[in-house]
Length: 324
Image 1 (cartoon, rainbow, N blue to C red):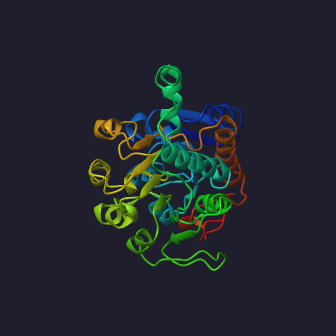
Image 2 (cartoon, rainbow, N blue to C red):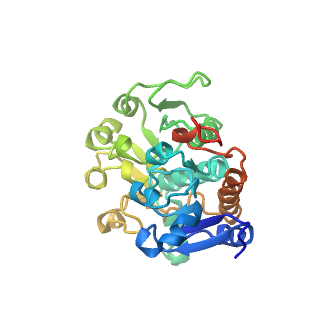
Image 3 (cartoon, helix red, strand yellow):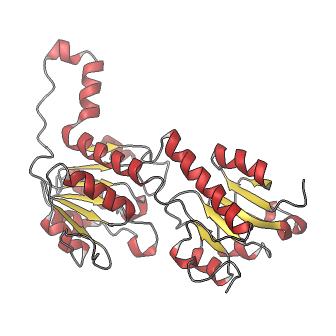
């Protein structure tokens, strides 16, 4: 290993492009999980950066005395204790923007699949039932005439809104604070939003503030023609409440790309006829994941070379490269 190159830890199942570039640009060390017990004292003292594809706890951060930067693969970074990292003047970055369009495209596709039952219609054709039984049954749900509510109007939420606006649909939203740069109606609470829309798209980060935010009350407010689309974090949905609401038709249908305990999806969800399920693939194209991987490595390279981070998370925007 070259003593001139900074030592970077590849923690978890990192993307192959992250590994490929990191092994060229840094002295890279790999471990399956962020467990200090997997590293000896000398190695831990040499680590200056982490490419994170697993949970990074406060204890693990504290075990690395010379850590300077944690580059998280993904927009959501609730698995990284960024608040604690900031107290240590350790920069934390994520990968916004490069996946916004891909996730927004997938969200619209998931909404259409949920409403028009397109995956089920294709399965009907492939099973020979079109020829044997006639046309696929008319769908009871449609995108026409719907009112869209977006829970979380950040970069991705806004990209979703712009796409659905082009479909001629009214857009409403709920965020903690009202945006001044959009004309969409803002609602001060999620229950207020759910009460005035029939299609709720959830694209908020995970964490304590959004844990099971979509509960039985929200689903009840959405109503019997209501459709829930979840593409942010599975933790934001009360899954037992959703299963019950789908089963008794409190709401009409749901489309989910994220789940509370991935990759384990409740059998009760899979057994329901009025839910469309995807295995967390919203950003899962080669080009988008490569862009995310490049941003991880570029953030590491910039910070470790003494330059500003490209995409710092909010907790870490208050100090500069000198640590002040």
